Image 1 (cartoon, helix red, strand yellow):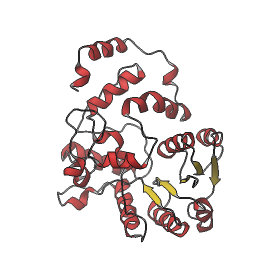
Image 2 (cartoon, rainbow, N blue to C red; image 1 turned 120 degrees about the vertical axis):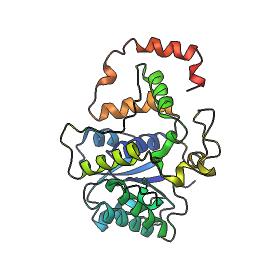
Image 3 (cartoon, rainbow, N blue to C red; image 1 turned 180 degrees about the vertical axis):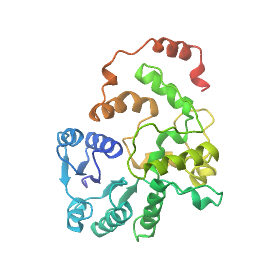
Image 4 (cartoon, rainbow, N blue to C red; image 1 turned 90 degrees about the horizontal axis):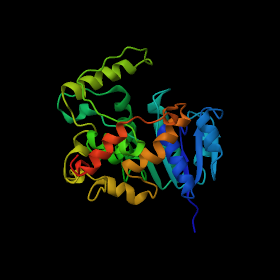
Length: 290
């Protein structure tokens, strides 16, 4: 039986670290790139079964060849530090040289391409450019997904909050506001991103993932409000990945682990009396109607 080898980059981030944990539990051999081996999440991942850390620069061609050597699958989530476009292209080229069979790139849309007068978000549009480069690669890009979508494709914000409340035994609420007030310092370039988000979603109320995923038969709405995903691209993605979780299971089993390894301690605090309200809500049948 062919071994299951998986390459990850930026493995201390929430997306890649979560994939590494689940992949290890499913028996994958994980080759995980990290920037700092001493990072708390990197230390945690190094202690998982079948996970090997690779420390190096994503701008180093030889390092990328070592990272992808013997790998059949790759999950790639690039970040805005450094030249994300050049790194995204180099990663795709390295995967192609290594003969990677399934290349999953965590992309985001460029809303300006929909000819609606919507602005392009600077930290998202570069990912869309990388996505299109991957699509043009000879054997990469035959099957494209935006893994950021996960269960949110089927659940409203209020439904997600309800499932988080029930799983975490504490009140989680959703409030929409057309404005974003930034009262702390933000990294260079991110203020423009936040201003664009305020305009794109607060003023234009544009669909989060663009028209290609948020409309049409491939992304039809699931009327019963569950996260089964039948008939959608989410179901197709789940058929390729045995480690997916529903939103409530994610909130209960995974989210607290991610938060803890990122230095947060709220999960150690006593939950408040909001649990009683959640219980009454479930008993009243509201669970079926949210």
